[in-house]
Length: 251
Image 1 (tube, rainbow, N blue to C red):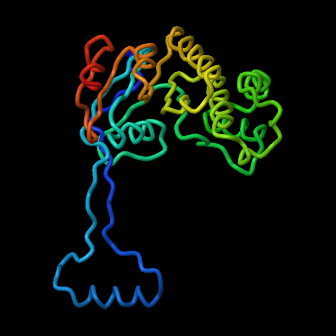
Image 2: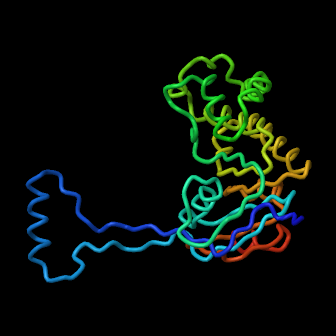
Image 3: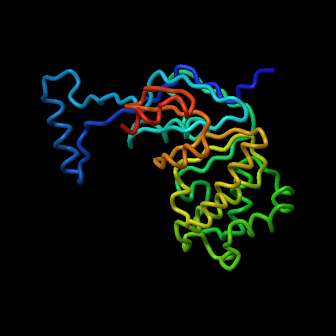
């Protein structure tokens, strides 16, 4: 059996950037319709195509940690959302083998009106963990997060750091085969970051895999085995950490 757990082939994500004017009243809307009817242009409000990702091909093997680097807007988060099945690709395919635990934007998968306790069960279910397993691991999740005092408070009152700690704690206890982490650890305090780094290191040492997005090059050198440099939605360079990709990116 192949040891490839993530196989990305010719992946692309296209968005339409609307040039249409949004009217702020019924009168404005009617006027815009009249203008469009009088125009001689065959496509008066055509949308512009924007490719957030284009022809991306990557592979992650069991036990590897792939770091995605690139400037803001280079397509890193879009790629992680496709791998997490949050959005579909416009072209190509991404095959993922195993259970995935995703940590993307702060609070993703949490309902703001529910308490921390209720969101543990909700988020665990979204990550594919049976309720009986969440019940069995509940105390460990709470202890790892450090938010026991606020467990029965709606999470809309949580700070961003509390969000991250609880979300990561759930993800850390669902026995995922692949961790997908998008810069969220930068929100937590230093002590919690060290706890998370230790967990990721233990996860990788056990033969599991991860994809990490971070602007912290020291963190990447510590965790990652491979690096992919994205620029304007395309893979610019990819290789082992020691291959010099990071040096080219940071130059």
